[in-house]
Image (cartoon, rainbow, N blue to C red; front, side, top):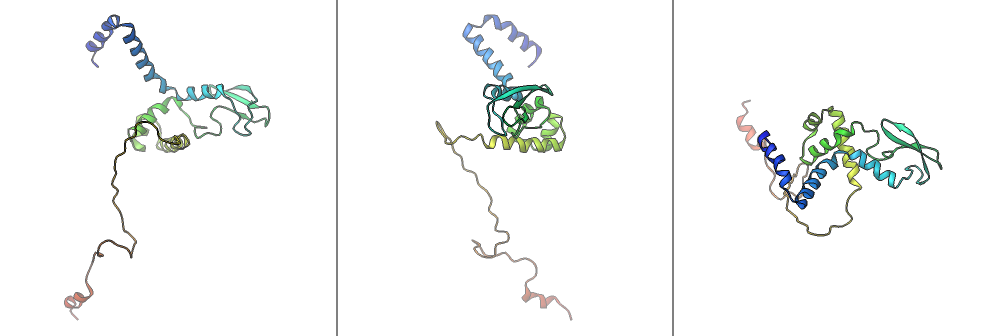
Length: 185
């Protein structure tokens, strides 16, 4: 957006009704909410803390590590944080995760996604597999509401099959009957 258009938008804000202002505020807050994925995971863990090792809910705070709250289970006496025993455990740079996930939703391959986020190719590969592993268990048990299906065509390969071809086999190379014609002994 150019600066003049932005200035016009700022000047139009006082003219908005209260309902329009609330809609604008909600739209702006939705744009910012997915940017802090790590914070939302930590908040959900704090609401219902549970030890991933033994399943106990009897946890105590056990200091901070890398700006993350650590906990200690009173039953098994192991320390943990909100990401322990999850696919996102030990992943670094949580501030870059939303940008990487956005690239994944736009079907970016590993190298462009890594370049966009400023991480190495190995990190991009690790993140891709960890994020896919994280959403693997987050599938809806059944569909509800409006569902739309589309058809996809996949080319079928008969490579390596000797039987059951729906067509005659292709001949490649020289035909044995014609080989003798071209030999000069």
